[in-house]
Length: 178
Image (cartoon, rainbow, N blue to C red; front, top):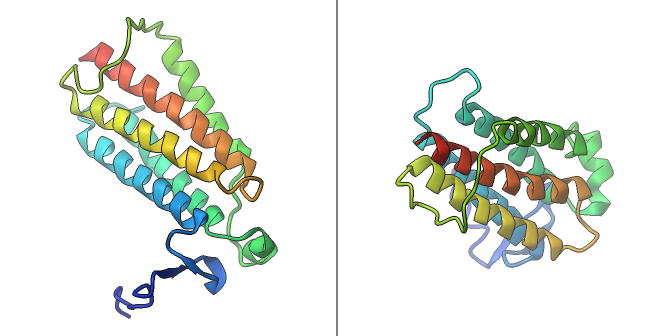
């Protein structure tokens, strides 16, 4: 099977269960922003030179796995959720926020001090700069999801809000080590 199906040549694409929508449908735009976030996190992960047991790279890999589950949820219309669950797909749940909360607490225990406005890239640390970029993409994904109004899993909004905080803190943590 070819990746080039040509089915999108008309400006349409598919959600889960073959539901055709325009490529500028709010669900596609939101899912695309999350996909871009995943790619931005991939850049950060590739730039992470730290080799520790609790490295940010491993944490980011786990977040990327969360984002894949999250994208499946976004790509499913509310009326198809029973079918989604019956097919064995995992619905994104608020429990995933707990690991983000734990990471926030872990970083904040270090009592890193922040002085003034943050200028991404000013420290010349590529990992921190990529994290700052991922944070802005995360915020945009959150805004795009809000365009779906109440047709979105609330756990996703909480997760993205918290994730942007974690990304900001991870960048500041790295800059404090640089």
